[in-house]
Length: 581
Image (cartoon, rainbow, N blue to C red; front, side, top):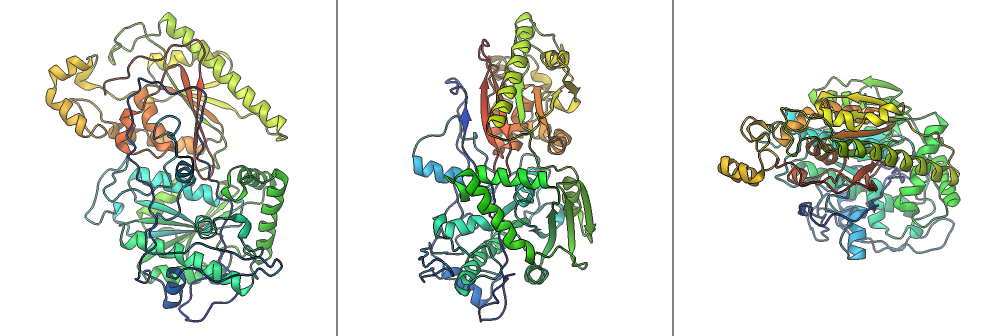
């Protein structure tokens, strides 16, 4: 394994390898055009920046690796079997851990056209939080900017390709950020793609352990850039958890990695993903060939063949975690069994263990739908009205539309040669009458429907039943305060969206645990918060999200990003204006 060495001479030929199969799909699919009367959502996410000027050595790197990271790559590299020239972009480390642009940002720059829908219709999990960022479920802050007083933690992933490491990295980032822990995932494959943007110019032996000296030097540069950004994240950005997503295949390499981070006061937690079930590996490989940026434009069979070759190149040299002095977690077959070693080292690592016990490789989609119209023109929280005749008709159309959509999706998979069983559909509602009755048609057709009290709408308190005009007349100061912070402000005796997010954490954990499709029929306030979690929205964007009654919002999971699809419900009129809070 190639790892950072204090020696000023080049390291041996073994290499710390990346998992090249990071799924990266930010495309947006919309079945209906966005409503023109929606509240516009500001684009609050800042795009990653690229800096190519930094004369200082990257923190935490030896002189040799500092020079590798900061000096432009201008040499000509010739692979061992193909005499081709590899032209690479300069690796200017020190410009920030935001250097690798998410594919959504790259597509936006290339296409120069507005996004379909709003600025929150793409997954923002790979965009780093700002220095003043407050997470949706963050309970408190400290002077250091780090929660739980747990210090700095680096999670180093271990495992062969197609074992779900990227899924682990992204899922942990999503959950920890939601809790308020400043977290960022560093995918080594992103750094390779930034360094060598043309995939055809990657040396043929790049993914081999016994690579040529030129290729080893290239990999050293990529690794040095990634690790330098990890140290920058901790030292300059007040980061708390960095996730180092690479294969890390050898014991010697892991020991050097552990030594390097602990010398800088960073606690290291290794997580190894082990799979010996062919169906899991096959599903991961198929997911990679569909969504990995490495295989855009490839023939399907050739992509699978190439990726399997990458796996086979690493298998003879792979060493499973067995360093008993380390803190590590072994996950077998996507959560089928978990082995812990020396993990009682603090609150935050134990919280990570708790989350991993609920995590599955998510294959099922999450559908969001609003409840139907009630018998009251201005429904009140206290009255809890029944559905009107129009609402009952909506409930039937909702069931017809979603079930027909799922049938077509499954048929398309079969026509594509993927013999997969149709996933089970589970329906969740709140304990409010409108949501229960809106989902009754699914229960009548034999689907499992479950009522969850956590899914009850945001409590309006003293604002129950008030129109916007009445609210402005009754509580003018509260309306002004709400406009300043719509996510955390509470109207008198009411809940805030932050309160609702904290209340929904058990639902989020169960969403991660269930591999099947889930339909959530709930009030718009609940849908906003859950959508905000799955798509990594900024807190102040969450109260402005709109969910029309004439569409179902589908969240399609993948290891690298989640995607959004909107399914139109024929014969249903758009909803009235959403709740004032």
